[in-house]
Length: 252
Image (cartoon, rainbow, N blue to C red; front, top):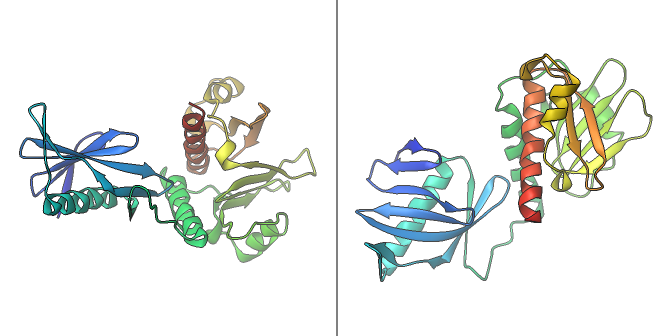
């Protein structure tokens, strides 16, 4: 089956049904004037579809019962739409969620972060996907950090003055030119990007010409990273904005 996009996150199938978000934790399925709602849970690169929570049909303000065949069809079609949008699908009972093995969860997170980084479409001379760095650079970066079990490197790079950066599936590590100590922050605790500071710091430059990224750690301390201008900076910013948004939503 194929889909076409008719609005933001709204997909219409060639079979005549529509799938769209019904909120952060549910999806709406529409066919022949009737609507069904299914509960989901969003993760990084994965969406869990709760098969035990599919409502009946809603039409003209009234609710009608749903057969087991209808339920299976709704689950399969919603799952197909999610996969079309690039996410993995986990099917689970509402109260018996399937726990993805830690190693597989990290691998999926890595793939999702790589996609976020590559979205702007280019590397810089030094900052790039970890697997695309020269072997000697990868070895050198890993010598500076002690990765936890199943933690995977995603992005890394050195500059000519010895400063370096390594982003993994869990943390951002870096060392600036001015300090010999290694800084680190857990990605899940990064506060939203402060883009206004970027612009004030490099007044008069376009977004594509900026070379700093500014973000807050949990303690409120502001960090400023120097990054080559261009696609690599945009990709790293996109990742930090993603985790900043997740951090914001958890605090609400």
